[in-house]
Length: 583
Image 1 (cartoon, rainbow, N blue to C red):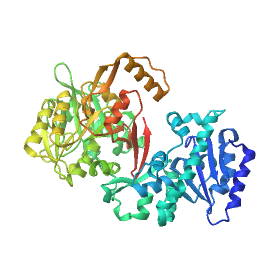
Image 2 (cartoon, rainbow, N blue to C red):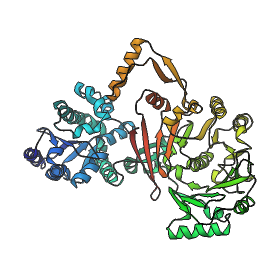
Image 3 (cartoon, one colour):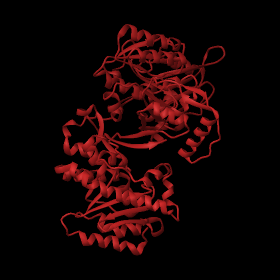
Image 4 (cartoon, rainbow, N blue to C red):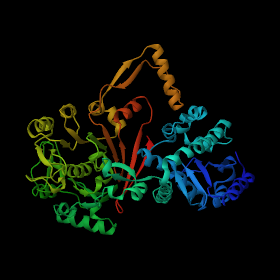
């Protein structure tokens, strides 16, 4: 591992080579992007592992800056995203003239996330035994690189990264042929994109490949005509229509408070009226008290007289609108409180899951807390799918398509079956399959065992499902009534030998101590929903997409993390970014 006095050797090795026709330098970084703990540099004279913690990341980067920013020397990385961001953040270096071997692998084999180990396999090479032995430990604790003194085996591991990368280059270049210069140009675009997207991957959707996610830099330079055009994100909420339902003194207080606090009615989520208490509203995560004057029974009556009747689930709506009004009742069944939720249609919100909706026939479950925007996503997914398929919405409480005989235009060409009460939702789901032959069935919320069983029956009859439920994947597995949606859970008893083996396996995977247990939880069936999308309240344009629910559930039950995609949508530019994370 090199100290500051050895940095000149690396730079000089570059200076000796820069006038030659071909000069390639392999680069890797550890601890990125939050820190920059090591920089490994592989040149023709050797591999240098440079300690950025001891020397200082800024000093190291400044010494290497002539090399990293050279337009002559070609810098070879595998997956340059986070390294490029870290070099810019910690060293004020913008790396230039780059070849990203992961981008090259995507061009050659169509795999967006091809790991370095997988690249080695593709070109007929194997990883070094030392790297294979230490790989699991390194992947599960990135902070290991910041500890000092750094063990010798860690330094060897870091050096082997570069040695192996150097060994792969001839085979990769041979495969690329005339595309080499195009891949260098695409890699440069990737570096620039990483700096504005926090080190995440910018993607588009490849029409010719079933809307598969692809690196936008590569598609832009090679097949721009196959990039799916994404719709602009447009919010249609009509919150003013719901505000007009309020009594005059509450209506004016809400408008006045919104102006004073610089809130936009487009951000209004709920208005709450409880008899004998001050009215209040929510703008996103912020509560606002609207008036010192308390809500009277006449105020409650003023609102209820202007809306349709309440169903058995104590919900009502407005004809042709998406807003929902829910009633609280006292012990005499009189209405004592109202929760008025703004219904929204957000065109283009499904941009970041085009591949999930249009490139597969898999069933999709959207998970999130109340008020996180599940129904908004379901509406837009319904509209997108209905342009190509026969889609029927099983609409409990008219939650998805609004009140009235004619469904709201937000669901496009989809049809809608109304569900009179919660108790009948499962029966209407079965009726829909039997009578209307849908390709896809959409259900806003599955919350009871009968609906779980009905969803399984619908799936078994060959109908694709798009649905939502409360919680996240881990919490869903703790919900005994709903976990059947993702395969269910059963307990099995292990023998002594198997129990010891299981405890040892878990300890090896996490580094934590596990007591020997003879009872193990495991998935008891195939999931009804193949893909899970997890969203959070207040974070509208960042979702987690898990493509292999079976594998994720098995990992959770084993006490492990599972791999998922964090996708982000820039609603101003329509840019979609993607990052693989373990949660």
